[in-house]
Amino acid sequence: MTNVASKLIKDTSRILNVSEATITRGGMSLVVAVYVYKIIYPKIRELVRSPAGEAAKSKVTYKGQKGPAVNREFLVQLKKLLKVIIPGLWSRSALILLLHTITLITRTFLSIYVAQLEGRVVKYIVRKDVVRFALMMTKWIAIAVPATLVNSLIRFLECHLALTFRSRLTRYSYDLYFKNQCYYRVSNLDGRLENSDHCLTEDIAAFTSSVAHLYSHITKPLLDSLLITVSLASLARSRGGASLPGPVLGGLVVAITGRILRKVSPKFGALVSEEAHRKGYLRAIHSRIITNAEEIAFYGGHKVERTILQQAYDSLVQQMGVIFNKRLWYIMLEQFLMKYVWSGAGMVMVSIPLLTSTINERLNLHQPVSHIAEGKLWSWHIFMGITTVLLPLDYARMKDVVGRN
Image 1: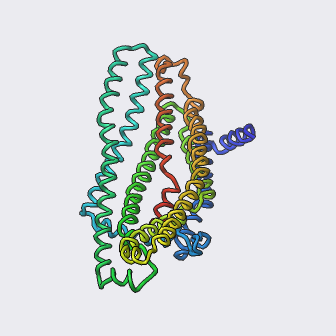
Image 2 (image 1 turned 90 degrees about the horizontal axis):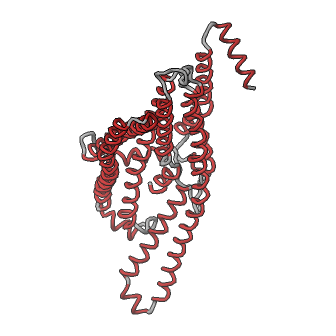
Image 3 (image 1 turned 90 degrees about the vertical axis):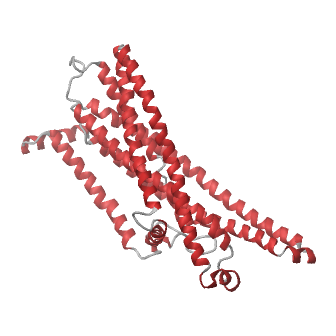
């Protein structure tokens, strides 16, 4: 099959008077374009045009209701909540978000620079150049200080961003809660919401924390993967190798594994939503016992109340056990695909610039073995950076946000 494809490329190149590399790149670009048009674009169009809630018909909770899902209804609700927690461009939330984004971008460039330093360290080890090796090690240790500072700032700003989101959403919820005696109507005239206190405290805290965490674990991986892919392509181009096959292979592997994970992913949104409901119910029972402690003691109803409380707790434990069991097999598959399959694809990606290189590095005195070692180690660290930053792109995290929305 490979010989047939090579012969076809050579014949086409001779007929059209175009280089074989150009034909190969054009063919691979065409394959990627067809895949995007036939597979990815219909999914995006279906998500945008589908009526609200239609995508969630198959997602049913334990009470027979439609479970939460990543659909148009969720996007509309999330957009409304984002307007509450980020009211304007000059608000405190927006400024912290901007600082957080700048910190994430800085961390990306630091990662690339550190990978270059490590490649140079190996180059001077192979050359046995002690002076430059010591200089590179000094730079490597010196860059560790701002790198660790940036890592701490990312976590620091993420926590402050979640706290700012929580403060704004809590203030907005309090305004609605005490408007037109809503607090009285919820507790005494409407039985649909039994745990308003839990919704105003734990649910808001969990939701805002998940949103801030999700932003960090989506923005940084996407930015890192883009810049690192460009770096790998430039490395291949500088060595006279094929620059397109590596990024295309990486993109296809990521797309296919992402599609597999999405297909086999349990309904984490419905599971997390049910868990939050049972936590709220358990808390409501505790509040009811505290409120009616005098009547319970007078009539001797402590045994009944204890039974109800124990049943609520057992129900919560059972639900958490279901989530743990489903996460076990899902995470096992996720780790296999995102660590080992991606690492195997990465070895191919890193080897492509050397295997397809048109420069005879072994015979070129200006390209000794040290340069080969430098490029090999640098490209390998770059790819390992891709796999590290893309691991947080977990579909289950998005479902957690949906379940708490």
